[in-house]
Image 1 (cartoon, rainbow, N blue to C red):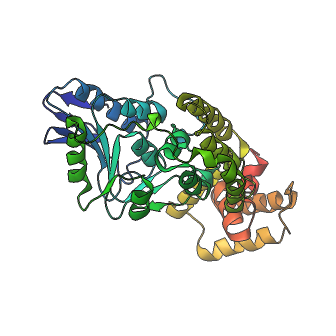
Image 2 (image 1 turned 60 degrees about the horizontal axis):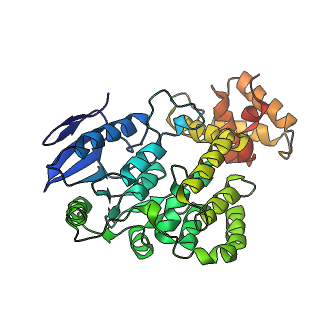
Image 3 (image 1 turned 135 degrees about the vertical axis):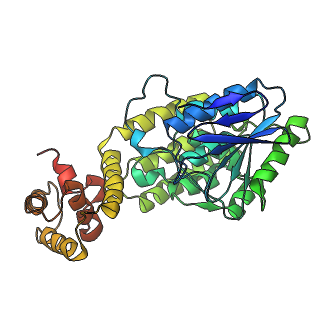
Length: 366
């Protein structure tokens, strides 16, 4: 399953492949359709790095994604689940990259979302194509960025830019990322530019830059920014516990050591992942995608009928008894084959509170 490394340089697995160019190993994340950085990909990258570290012919590493994007993020199915023995966590991989004795440069083309951005933050430099888009959308799912993201991002771009990116879950395009320092270079061919940059770092023509060792450039603004971005997070994601927690974690990067900030981040992430809000939002995330793909999904007319039945239950006010009853009736009558489909219709079509996960998710097993 892992990656196999051959001295002089070839890495091959089901998830990572490589080529050598000018003394640099280019590791391609190859996990269609979105290059999700799940446990298998992380293990393959870690194994590839282990081989590259001891090959004296190789001066550095470039990490890139096959296809049209760097990575669509981590594997959300892993959230809240215990790690299997020997699992390479995203935080472990990020720290491995950051402390790697040879320069590691991310070559970002297209979308670089969630776990993709977290991995890139740990690299020693980042080169993007014109279409690069970096994003940390974790608040959408009731989570905070993990794997040291809340501590590395402000060290690279400053508190204000980091808070704006995370509290709004807003993507940053290549031009803005370059201006902020999130990207070091924008190039037509980001892989070729990343190879050059890795060689320049290895030769001393460019300095090493380990993100964890950087000072937050605008740390003195922390108190001034707190109230503003607590309000921004609440406006963007009303009632979500993750918003203020993400703000406080980012602000803490200005005053606490890196490892202490990462430990606080790990604790907050675990608490949120096990909490009702993230469970509800993740339930809807997967349910909406299943509904879009299901061959037996309700057709438009049936979906409208379900929505009409649900709305007849009145305003969705806790404990939602009338909505739960109506949703169960729709399921019993076979209007939808799966409970989660009714939850999606309730939230998306009828305004049922997303933080509840839908009436049937809220009701629990029946």
